[in-house]
Structures are given as C-alpha cells and as structure tokens.
Length: 434
Image 1 (cartoon, rainbow, N blue to C red):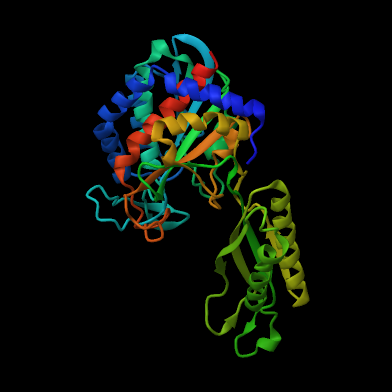
Image 2: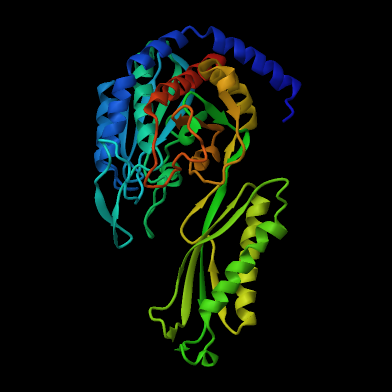
C-alpha cells in the first residue's frame, strides 16, 4: 500500500512520540504485575459464560471493578452493556476501548480445570455455553487496562471510554443487541468519542504477535433465508410432486457459481454458504416446502449488492424453472458492515504497536472472512481493530483448534501484550493530540 508523503512524515513524528512517551515504562511494569489477576478474571468468566443479552453476572463483575477504580459507570446499555468513563487530569481527545462479553451455544470439550459446565436454552433447544471465541480474554484484558489507566488519571491528556458490549455474536430472533444497539443508545456520545480501538484474540496466531490490516479487515455479513415451496406427494409417486428438496439441491449447487464466476477474486474474497437445510419429516413423504439458512460475506458495498442480487436471482429462477417458488430474505436477522480500519489511523498508530510488541512481531494479515460488529463503531468514528496472538509457541496454526469450536483453546501468557497494546495506543494517541 502506497503511503502519502504527508502521512509518511506524520508516521515518523508519531514514532518519536511512541518512543519517548514517559508513561510507557509505567504501563509495562503495571501490566506485568497484573498478569495473574487478569488470568484469574478470565478463568472466572470462562467458567461462567453467558449468552448474548444475558450477561447479567458478567456485567455485574465488570461494573463493580470499574466502580472500585473510581471510574464513572453506566449500566444496562443495550440490555446488559457497561460503559466506564475515565476523565483525565488534562484536556484532550476521547478514546474508546471496546471488549465484547457474550459466550456461544457450544458444549466445551477442553480439559482445563475452569471449563464451562453451563447449560441453558437457546432458540428452543438445550445447549451448552462456552467462551469459544475469546471474549472472556477481551473482558479481562480491558479490565486490566482500566486498572492501569485509572492509576494514571492525573497524567491522561483526555478521556477514556471503556465499552463492555453484549451480544457481539448476535441474539435470538426477535431480540436487539450488540454494537449496533449500543451506538443507537448513544455510547459514542456524551462525551463524543474521537477514535475507537479494539482487539480480538486469535487461537491460530502465536503468542507474542499482533496482526493488523488497513482498510477492509473483516467481512461484512448478511444472513439469509430461502424458502422453496413446491407440491407435496407420496414418496412412491414423485411425478405427482414438485419436489422442493430436489429444487433446493439445484439452488445450492447454482449458488456456488457466484464466487467462482461473478466475484473478481483478484480484488476481494467473498463467501456464499448454506449452513442449514430443513424439509420433510418422513422417508416416504415429499414435503411441500424446504427452508435454507445461509451467510454471505463480502468486503465492499458493490460486492455485497452483487451477492444479494445474484442469490435472489438464482434462487427464484431455479425454482421457477422447476415449477416451484422461492422466497429470499436478505438479511434474515443479521447484517454487519465491513470491519474497516481507517487507513490513515492504522498507519499512524502502527509505530505504537511496533514499539509495544517489537516490529518483527507486528504482522500485516490477509482479510478475514469472519465478521465483527465492531464495524458499527467504525461507521461513526475512525477505528482500529487488530488481533492478539493466543496460540502456544511452536504449534501448527493449521492444527490449532479454531474459534467457535468445542476444543477452542487460548494460551493465557499473551494477555499482558494485549493490555500493553491498548494502553499504549490510548496514551500515544492522546500524546499526539496535545
């Protein structure tokens, strides 16, 4: 990526600020001293996970901790969200730092002593609950950041907003939540936020490393529902039916041509996935209808429109060709914009990350087709979202358990790097704005 001369000299100036910030040594010392405390918080959250919009115990612990630090606390935002406001001793910008709080409906399979045994009901089914994406780590890290920065209050050139957000993973149908709802309820106002930083731990990136990407970092996502209606018949007489299962199979196959034939994959990746298909209840009855659920991932508004248009066209026309009908709903319940790192901000803050982790440990990463509702904050203010290594050193990333799986595992030794990174981003940004 080309860097303009103005931005280049700005980066040089910012590098000097990051190198000479006198508060950095305090951050390092305090973060190292908090290591065991942060791990204890994380293990407690891990053992007692809560699904989106149900993070009552979780948010209570966070609010109590922030209040103990003398931070102004607001609760009940977007159902269970917590916001802490730390006003520094000197004037300056408002920096927001965000962590997500919710677990996932996954039954844990790890053998750690603090493994979750929690069960609950989700979407009408009994499920396990697990922090299978690292949100427990994010909360513990940001609680550590709050403890460090609150101890530097008189030296802070500005205000820090600590955003603990519910329901990043989405909510049950009919509910509202997550970053979009927090933004609607004014989390970026009073005081008005100038910039937002966030991190996500990664189980397939080695401990001690940070990864980042300017621009489109994580995909925008739409979920979708396709309902195919045909004509029911006895399974022994298929000629009397318009079989929605066969039509659905053709639709699924035809949808695969969108990425392979319509998307310019040399510019940006895209994904079209059908994750659920439901139709019929007996071997010898051809059902009247089939429901398919899926997800669309893209990195530009143009590609998002292309995906939506082509899915709709392929589904309806394929069904029509067989005498059936297809109804397409996009989005069905969820839409996240692209997680877009402000390019100028990312380049400006890169020296801060490099000074924190060492330049060799801060790596440019390819786009991620997973999605993040951190994007809703970035739609309103410049933001930087980066990744923190959580894989034990020497492991093969291809074999490390991935996110959203029962075996998901994080090496806790990398947490202090996350604490230092968020503290230093805040302090360096404030120092540059003095």
